[in-house]
Amino acid sequence: MVRRATAGGAGLRRMSRPLLRLVAVALSGTLAVAAWQVTGEPRHSAPSTVSGAGTPAAIGDVLSRTTSISSALSAAPTGATLIARTAGVRLLEYGFIDHYGVGAAARSAPPGRRLLAFTLEPRPGESRDAPETEPVLSIRIGGVERGPLVISKDYLVAAVPAALSSSSVGSSSAGSSSAGSDGVDLVLTEDGVRQSISLLTGRPNSDQLLVCTRLHRWVGSATPDKGTPAGNPRDVTMKVTRADGTSGMTSGTITVESASLSYWAQNLSHPPERRSAFLHVSANVKLAGDKVGYGAEAALLHLRLPDGTVVPAVNAAANPGEDIDDVFKVPATFTTGTISYAGSLSSGLGTQSVVSPVTLPVSIPAG
Image 1 (cartoon, rainbow, N blue to C red):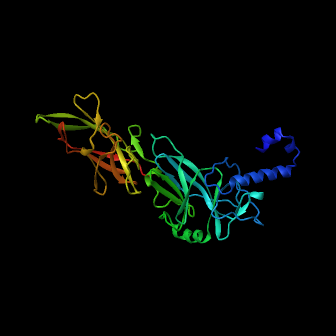
Image 2 (cartoon, rainbow, N blue to C red):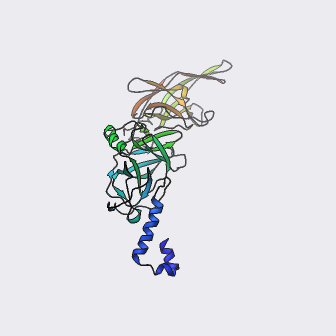
Image 3 (cartoon, rainbow, N blue to C red):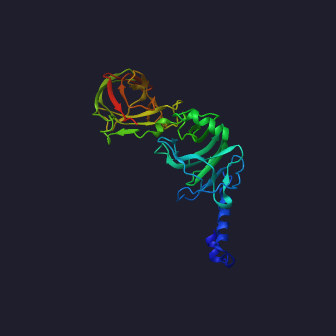
């Protein structure tokens, strides 16, 4: 703005360099103070030190955006990421500072508070099919949530109660903690699901969706060396009984073509537990005379976990009358299990029964 005015306005051309700098600093301060919804230009330089002598205090629980802070921040630990269905966020840096801003825009902590600075970057959401959206973010201080907070490449600075910041660090510094009223958290919300990262320790709280942060969540015929979802087709024999009572035998094959882990299903349902996930299995059945195969009915599929637990499949397709999305609820840390294709299924058209039950291994690498 100053450059454009200087090029076209004779009055500004006569300003001295110190005066031009003062105008720029004042404008920067106006943009940075007390903004809960902020965006900004990329931060190109390292933190710059500002003088603490006579620096005026920020007002109340201000959340400001700034390009200058008094000291370097701590790098967030690995895993300081929150992923929702269509958007995500990663905490990059965090820590307490004495001052932020330069010149007339410099501010120190209000009485009884400390300044907490942090930086963020956006991450893609879990769903490959849904359009990416901006993450819905807020900051929760002592149980009180405020937002929305828009990601910027600048530093974000919040004034938090001094007693709260000092008493909470020790209780949540040893790994994942529970979100509550005694901390300072970055909160991501989507589809009514909230998850958070402590801004005092940089660690995700226990409401983080663990499966969404996994590196390995999908295996298929294109990745046979990374898992076992797509073995050779298995022979299967079926008995089909029509509604009029006539019956016959037929044979064919069943193949597990791919397997994947997610928190959300196609119909937007999800497990109630944050440490659980949906295992999606694409099992294709092709019987004699069929030109193309079809998705195995959920009622005929079960998954046995290593601890012996047997989990039935559910069709979680958005349009279950026409489509199939066979899912099993599993731990978010799932790596291996055995799928069985067995049992009978009745409908208005008749009954089909698996005469020769089949078992198929499925595995996804850990991590």
